[in-house]
Image (cartoon, rainbow, N blue to C red; front, side, top):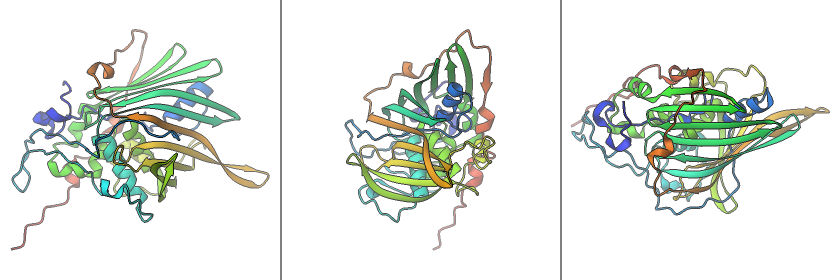
Length: 378
């Protein structure tokens, strides 16, 4: 199946040709622990649940909050008789009208769900990435870049390079909208996995116009890149606040969360989401997380920073230490991201390719979760 992109879709999937999301995560691996995975590769046993952060002001020219959805026609008619998929300019639950207001009463989980939606359906974006990992008395710094074609295309490219002593880890996650590849290379050793995004879309089933604002749909398409990163922290942590503030004069919400005991509502239905509630086997899973989400019209609900904390006990004193941070900075809206950016060729030296598709398959089609349409009372 070739990638048609979000605007050309209807033929097989009812409305979108998500050529992916992925994954991102990003997909960032079954548990989307990019930072942790990198650290494990670089330092043997490292933490679980690693991601990103940023203090740098955002750069780039914007044209407002123009979240685009497919402009193709859907083969399934809406109850009102419309069958044209029209552009949506706001996502579910939270619109751009609240960006400037910054109410302290805002539900943090609503903010994260809206950020997931934006990461799947939002406009194209590019950024530089920096990651800091502090464990066992060492601090490692990784640098890289992030590109997402946006608008449901599922096209993503995330590159990182992290050095630990003599070991150099190169991380690459890339999707052309059909297949998502995740490669980790430590020196000359390459571990490679892939996801068949078409199978995941088929499991989700046909999608109607009214489903575009469904947070559950966005979650299950949040595969790879930032979208999966947000999907994973949403399911792993219980969020207790969304405080409006500024980082270097840049408006953001600061969200704080701790390990969950029960699944959020709504919750995605794939095995990777269920795995988020499993206890940590290694004991290295960060117990707290802090997330900075953009609060501007230029880059609405953009995850600028993620910080992970672990409890530390010394001399009967309990403190919290940051073990991982990931930041996306120098953010911009690219004029064009060519198809060649998202192409990947498997090297001849790769002996084994792990297929992780089944971990992302929802337990049932989307239509089983829809609320029934009540007849209009006359």
